[in-house]
Image (cartoon, rainbow, N blue to C red; front, side, top):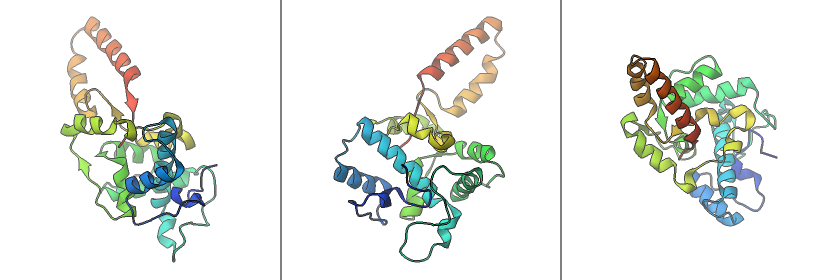
Length: 216
């Protein structure tokens, strides 16, 4: 059973002593070593995905700001999946973290967040160690993609889709041209006759089948 949204991922293991001043990657590497998780393995990927999801929920809940003292849990938040209000609250706080005006709906918040190319771990470290979130330029999308597709950086697809796709909705599609480039090419392609449009659509469908979701 996953920890409640009010609890840091690293606080749920009685045989592991968390260091809340450590970056996410440092903390997870230390945790993985203590649990015998092999870097790049399916189990490693699955647990890392869970950790990222849980840390985002924990650090971007507005109720966290009301906690006083050393406790790292928020009793007001219930166990299990987040309700829609809680999800919206978290997405809005993530928007604020990168200087984007928060929207009034989950769908609009997700759309705004995906317009900005950000290493998902930066969102966590912004709250864990007060590190400024780095916003990548879309011209560096290929570099971002190569970095994110390293074995130890990939995600577990099923875990990312858990809780109504809370995490997967934030991930960029990697490999192939960046989103901006594809948007620019699409209108020109649409003006080239029926047979070419059909071929382009077929190629785009093939690309969709090949694409993999991942993040740093």
